[in-house]
Amino acid sequence: EAQVTQNPRYLITVTGKKLTVTCSQNMNHEYMSWYRQDPGLGLRQIYYSMNVEVTDKGDVPEGYKVSRKEKRNFPLILESPSPNQTSLYFCASSQAGTGGIYEQYFGPGTRLTVT
Amino acid sequence: GQQVMQIPQYQHVQEGEDFTTYCNSSTTLSNIQWYKQRPGGHPVFLIQLVKSGEVKKQKRLTFQFGEAKKNSSLHITATQTTDVGTYFCAGLSNDYKLSFGAGTTVTVRA
Image 1 (tube, rainbow over the protein chains, first blue to last red):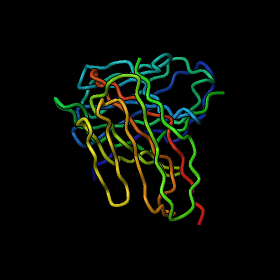
Image 2 (cartoon, helix red, strand yellow):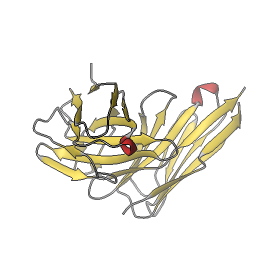
Image 3 (cartoon, rainbow over the protein chains, first blue to last red):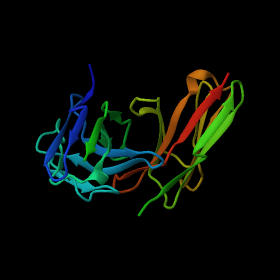
């Protein structure tokens, strides 16, 4: 089954404790992206990747890191989480080509609370 | 940077009525995508528009991309309870950055 998986689905942590949210897709997609969703703000792109070893900042990259060492995986790293990073996080993937990117498939989401 | 504004933020509709949600970008877009998110769920792709002035239909949903590729709209006719959810537009820039609108949350009165 074609899917995007994220882990963990729920996480409560404390300020300053490094954490990683994993994302994996089994569709051989080139494009992968991380978003955070906050009430009234829609989805805001954190980082995106067009291919292995290629990553770019989205609209809200501060406080986050990503890596793309393998095509299927795109982990999101919070080196020193703060309460303002409490949010719902989505990973997504899609095919990409000269015309841009196509239908994005979203993971189920990770609800993160930083106290 | 690129900004995508979406209105209205909320849409309360009587079952059977029509409504439209609008997206406007501050810059010209490569393409625009529309997604629907049900309460508690993740965004699900509806459609992608690429060409200037493009119009696409999916049953009761009609999507338009403006001539200048800076605005788009989604029109739903004869709203049903299954249309409940939040509709997002997402504009793609030339550097493959995707900017989402804040979404229109639709509720339906039976």
